[in-house]
Image 1 (tube, helix red, strand yellow):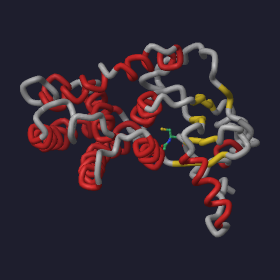
Image 2: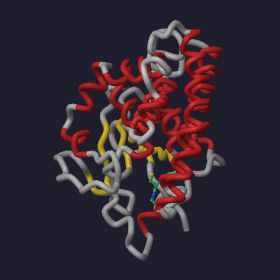
Image 3: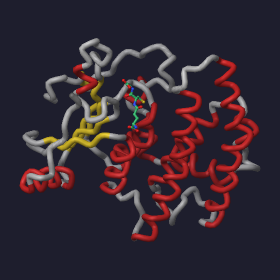
Length: 266
Ligand SMILES: N[C@@H](CCC(=O)N[C@@H](CS)C(=O)NCC(=O)O)C(=O)O
């Protein structure tokens, strides 16, 4: 049995949880691995929003009883727990995109009006689609090396160059100022910067992302990498202990990290 989410058939409970999500003094716990993984943009949003948050690690995730895994709504991480100030109520948000959207809305990273929001959602979706398809086709495929190399070749020869060309056009239309929309950091900027970081780790990166081919995308990455709140987050012991890949050795855990309690106590 996976963890069930509170039913919205109870109108009073639904309204109370909505209030927790909207309260300016709520705090957060993020259940995820000690890697950047799929939560790079999401942790950056917590930094941009000056959020008070705790990292939760699932130390018993691989237990054959699968109790931790099944205590989450989709048996995967990340899960964001949003706590009321007095800790008496917690709202759960599962799935990285749902969490990103909630945090982006809360911390003002979805533009100034409905039109800007729809543009940001479109750029975000386009970058997320390439990121997700790369994860599925290469990272989580667990195929023999020659199959993985063939998959990477497909991305390097067509999918990534197409995405670069198209996104450069849109960034040019916004004045190559490091943002997709207006002059503020948005969810689209965060998702794209994360994707550019991933592309730059490929052997073919030198042909895919260069100042000549991708000046707009590099500017977006620079705007994220130099944002004072993100610089500050990357100086923290927690960020420094995160692994870019789960194949790298585990780092010592800094203070402040909590271990996920399968009973749902935070
Ligand atoms: N669709 C999910 C995918 C999450 C996902 O694949 N999580 C992986 C880590 S990146 C996980 O929980 N793996 C452990 C497992 O499947 O048991 C999301 O976007 O949140």
